[in-house]
Amino acid sequence: MTRAEDAVRTIRDLRAQVAVWRDAGERVALVPTMGAIHAGHLSLLAEAKAKADRVVTSLFVNSLQFGPREDFQAYPRDEAEDAAALAAGGSDLLYAPESSEMYPPGFSTKVRVGDLTEDLCGAARPNHFDGVATVVAKLLLQCAPDITIFGEKDYQQLLVIKRLVRDLDIPVEIAGGAIVREDDGLALSSRNAYLSPAERKIAPVLYQTICNVAADLEQGRGADDASAAARFKLEAAGFRVDYVAVRNPDTLEALHGPVKDARVLAAVHLGKTRLIDNLPVPSQAR
Ligand code: PAF
Image (cartoon, rainbow, N blue to C red; front, top):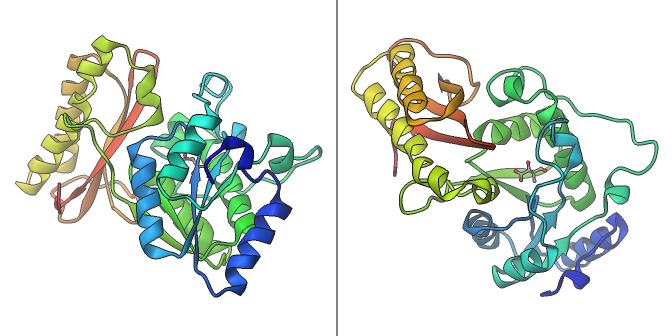
């Protein structure tokens, strides 16, 4: 499937195709996206292909997960280009529903995952994770894949989706895909396209700074101390900092002193662009 006009637009057509594969005994993966496809998405697709016989990719810019002053209107949209990139990456089917298919008139149900969503990006972006949980629950029910893959760059999102699936008994396996980075360390993101050339030069300081936090923690520095130093460094480099935090990697509970097993997470603004990144401690294959 190579062309945007070949995309499946309705739940009915999506289910019909998935049923054909199921009847043939094939294992189906879903890779949900909002488009603006880059190498990070393609690595999720490659992982999906390694774990399933058929891969459905979805493309839906989900209005529900954007705040009123966020970039829903400006979010990069080029369906033909995305369709070609996903097809070249091995997607068997592109599911690109219209907003009226996803949220028909009268739509009024929201899915809210408590607890994990209240802090970090949830504090900075109220209702964001309700929008994510609602659309992901719908995509999983629409497609009914065996496995679905989400990038670790949105680490809090990945944990929220794992909790959603567990709490609602949705029968799907969830895999996390490793963060893909530019040579200078900047995590790939559709929003990197918003950075001016001057901001793009500063942006890798985010990754360098969280690497320093991870290294400090591995050397026994306390979590509060290491994250305070990182905030200072980021502000000095010109970022507006939403948070730099050291958290339990499963529950996202705050950690304060020396840590053994943790996740360093950060969210910053550079001009009009919001960037997020995270790293495990200990470092694994960093
Ligand atoms: O990570 C994203 O691109 C989106 O949040 C997702 C999971 C596709 C839901 O809209």
